[in-house]
Image (spheres, rainbow, N blue to C red):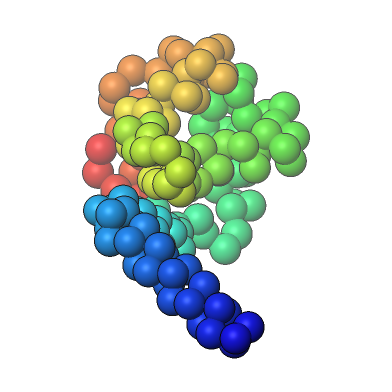
Length: 148
């Protein structure tokens, strides 16, 4: 008799669980879809982190020495930390502010040249603030070997 009651309770519990799943299927589908989007975005971030457009050279020592001559007011007093911040501004990946979905991993991207120029001008106004468009052209050709 106790076994029959246990079986009936199990069947009732199973029926309740099935009803809950049936009535919440749209909610569950949306959560599964959100989980798939999260996984896809996470995987994209891993792949894009390795395939950024600009890659930092293995050694920047020669460029640092020449930059000290190119813009002495800025670069002659640079510390190791300043150089790391400078190269990170040019080659680093930054969170994309346009992707602000709740509970999603942030998208990362490299800054555009104009965004880099603005950051450098804000951080080092004495040197970069005085550069004209022609000077920025020379700067970009030298730093990342592209036409501005």
